[in-house]
Image (cartoon, rainbow, N blue to C red; front, side):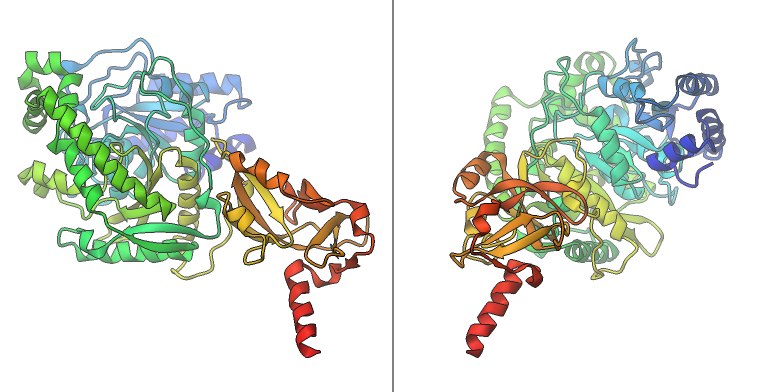
Length: 604
């Protein structure tokens, strides 16, 4: 068995012949038997079904199956063909003939569906205790809550029973359980993953979420599951994500002002959040303090406003006919949705528009925001004693997200002295899922280093990281007056340009000071070249054309090879343009040449 259930570890073991899907299934069945009291599953792993799936995959082979033999768990409000969907309410159960769109995509990619997981009934709750199948127990301490509503989905991954799992996230259900079980929890942009085949909680806000052991695993699953679905009226295509702050050496991130942070008396969580902010700074982030009050006001709309009527509408016929079938607290919340008037719904929509306009102003100043995922964690006893009040506490930093149409990812952020994990959440505007995943990957790689240590690059060349979604950006290498701080740099920044990296070209170029003395010319040569200092910038496609149009001869934009082997657009010079020019290759770059020239003038 591989030591890890991460997707690369499993695929490497399959390729090497040291593991088969059948052997993995046998191991996972044995692991499942070790946790009889954790209330993880509603439909637990079934031996014959799983072995049949493993043999099917072995007969087919790995080619063309990016998730070959990768085990995953499914929240039991998401359909898996031939397996009951209960939403943690036995009286509601039905057996679908088809799998949910997102589940079918994963199966088509070779994944193995282990079973259906426990949840807060009808996905109403952030704690994992509201189920007739038992209160799902925390993977680190069974006396504590697991987080909900995607409780079993998170715990199945945390205990090594699946490589990843699907949850849903309307108010935080894909992030709070991730924080309480030390996982990555991706809450994608609304509509990017189909909700066809998902029993709705609030249909206009529901999102299928992904729990994973690593951000790179979450990104791989996201890439497979992504896609517009005509069967889902709320589905929408992914848009270019723009500047990839997650792969950039420098970025700006928002932090709620200290007065707006609440930890509900939990000093350890407050300390761990301060450490999380410091860690983000160590990755190249610049802190910008935010007024968080508008976000809190938005969060209150979800359960304090008419959106609770969507929960009622989702199961209206069932709950009206069989109210006794629901958990008491679930029934109280759901039936409360019958009370708001249509006028209340419009008033709340107007208020939401006002708040979104205020909240969206921050994106002029920051690329992303960090908050605690939850201010504290409660024991199961504390949660059961005050189920609504404590659940409200857990939603402080999560309830606003889908109302404002933001993307978010929960990341592990250390451990308390009692051994329980703490988590932070990074969020950004819609369609920024990939930059968030890249930043989370860097975060995880840095987690064993003390804050302040030098950040290793995301890759040898971070701008070359593959993406499930196009960026809508053009990368361009500059070598002369467009460098940071030099006279023509404004031609980049005024067009929305952002610096990605300071690097060098491959050692196949010569640099010349052109006769006007104001610009260099970079020329590729068959021999005698050197690595020349340059910067890689990124521009929106919409502004790149006007930038290129302003470049005077003999300079132009062509393909430029960088020292890591990748190729980007970059400044090049026609050979004829170097007539009468001075070869300054030995200086290694335009900035060094200017410094030497200025020093010479000062000396004279």
